[in-house]
Length: 244
Image (cartoon, rainbow, N blue to C red; front, side, top):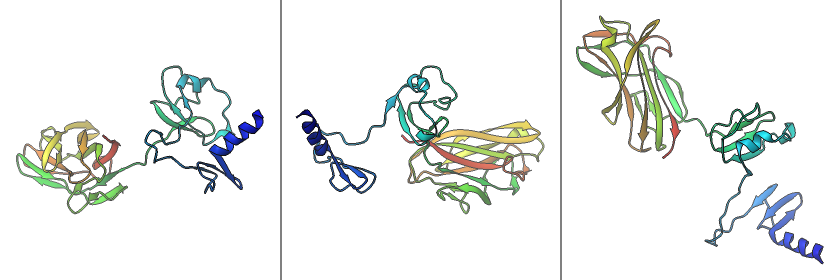
């Protein structure tokens, strides 16, 4: 009798079609087809991955090539790591590569633009830097014609500007500036590493609709500034690092 009841309960929750398995469906459309219960407000829908702490995952020894692709949710990152778990750095989802656990990272979103065109500045002038080429632009949000980056996903963006400032009497009297919607939000500084280079790094929130960024350069004195001829000397780049 106990075996019969067990089989009945399983039949209520699961249905099989050929080699496919369905939950809340008698006609599964894939190897595993899970149908939620959206009509019942008190029923939470979704699929929960195994939840485990870093310490517990580090202690496990049963993972190998056959477990490649396994996914877990790490709930706590305190404890000692080993070679299998040394890439776990925050709470979240991780997949097994066959040899170690790796974070499940989102798709990269961002751009990098470059130019080797010189900029001629009058004293105390701030001028927008116009870029001629793109190293990459994942979503085509940077417009070479306007020099503006207008992202269509709201969130926080890590922005870097670099420009060579080889020419002019005093390279340290020059800097790069980041403008958002036509107003300055960050001012960089000049460093010397083989040659003088003006640099800026900032994190900026963008609304994903109308907000735009552009790069500008300033000189205290009249100067013709060489922006360099390689990406490491000159670039304007930004990438999404988090959503609000």
